[in-house]
Length: 403
Ligand code: PMT
Image 1 (cartoon, helix red, strand yellow):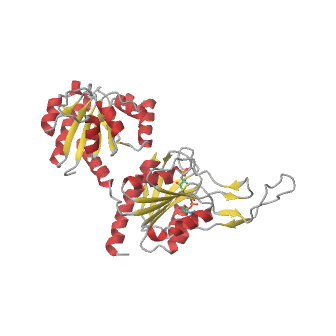
Image 2 (image 1 turned 90 degrees about the vertical axis):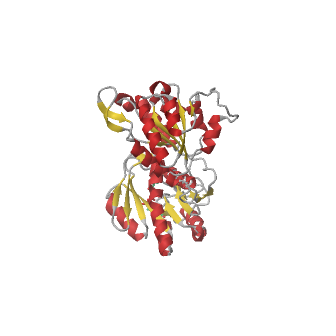
């Protein structure tokens, strides 16, 4: 936190008075804090309070006399290491999720190229409103961080979920997000993503339901942490992430060769793809005719990419996924050991609201030394961050032991 520049956004919620305590904690930790308030926030707490604690001017109006030639929403966005909006009102969350930029704070959100953390605080009924839930889901899907409010006594006189979390907990979350930035600088990570297609003839193929979303989120999250990322992807209807080396493949054999070619340059390999295990033994040169062309399909085994990497593991960190419809733990543990992985991310792909195609997942992480972690239901972007958080300590151990 020391030496970091934090922009603190304060919006119109009764919890705005707690932003003073948060600000004071950040200053004590050595951060430089610039505060931006919405017009409504100034009704709950005086700008003078936040200016006095931060020792910096407080910005609250797009057309304020800034006494500087700088375009303030751009210059603050450029100098910030993080933007924290606490409390974030339903109005602010809704506007940010829809790309509305009609005041200084929402305009600045659009200009931010560093992490943004929203800390919602509001009445329980408002927090449970499906529109708000959808807006929070959209913000997470865009890569923003959103903290869960606390359960407890609310200003409306009732108990419920909607309280601003304890400022100390907000500081911990800020620390966690800041420590992720550049944490993978100098590390090369190869991620596999998507399905493969195994042709039967020029127009037909065997494939599966993988959309590539999980692998693409991993690649983007690793790149945000400063890693050099190679994304080896099967056919996916997703835009190639910027600033990432993308290798497009079609079959498991092509994915195998693309991965092996880059093996030496790679420190971490994450197998999020769903490569086919079987392919037709022969590919017909012409379209097979409906009548008389085919009675059965003979299949042969494809390469098992992660298993092969396990054999040549060296000091690389290798992480696999297990897509299961039954016996999740037993089957995943078998794959963890047989593919010589550091950990495996087990997901139940029989669910409609998680696993294949969905923007969300609920996974268990099985470590090779026996620990199993159950992660809650979250966006694939958040799953990606949870996975990368667990890669860091493994990298440190492998570097310090020279294994
Ligand atoms: O792409 P999405 O729609 O976002 O869905 C995400 C996902 C469900 C595909 C992902 O979360 C996932 O579970 N990926 C692994 C799918 C899979 O092939 O599981 P598996 O249990 O069959 O394979 C185990 C591991 O071996 C995986 O790391 C897989 O990448 C790897 N493998 C599998 C087959 C093969 N021939 N070679 C491999 O390397």
